[in-house]
Length: 177
Image (cartoon, rainbow, N blue to C red; front, side, top):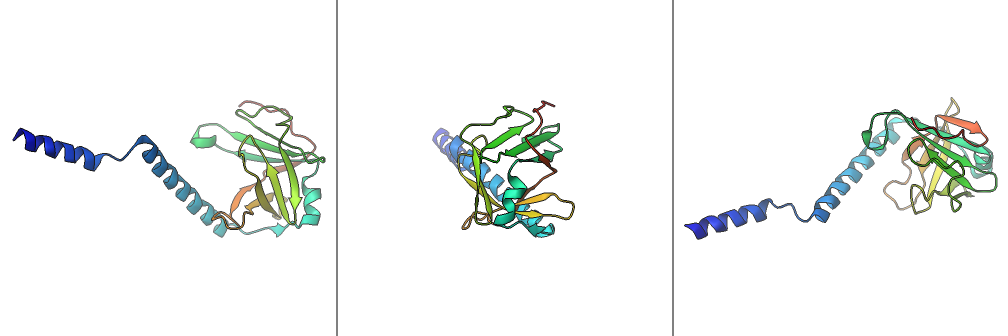
């Protein structure tokens, strides 16, 4: 009887065990990625697309400008406002700051932006080690929509963010809320 109970208990543990910590984390990450993809597809479908900004006009929309993105909550859903600034220096340097932890006004020396056809491409090593490219569109009130421009990616063509303001010059000094 003891052996039968031990065998049943072992089978129950094996059947209920969800896998290693890495496997559990990988499944959770995959589910979160799927949720984000669904959300981005929905937002893109529901949002009227602005007037495309072709390569020739991108330079004027970017060089010497700061694009401001403001969010009512912090990453991960934390309470408090969160603000990002992307300064597109005329020489191609990109200075990224945010209101939580990326507070150096000059950004990182290796970060830069360039125009590839009709796409804005940038390396923002503070947020991602890979180059990111976007198509930009202007909506009637002057704000800019960023659409992911990565052919072959499941995210290609999806709206990822919209500026809250476009400022002339470099951003104001970061403030911790």
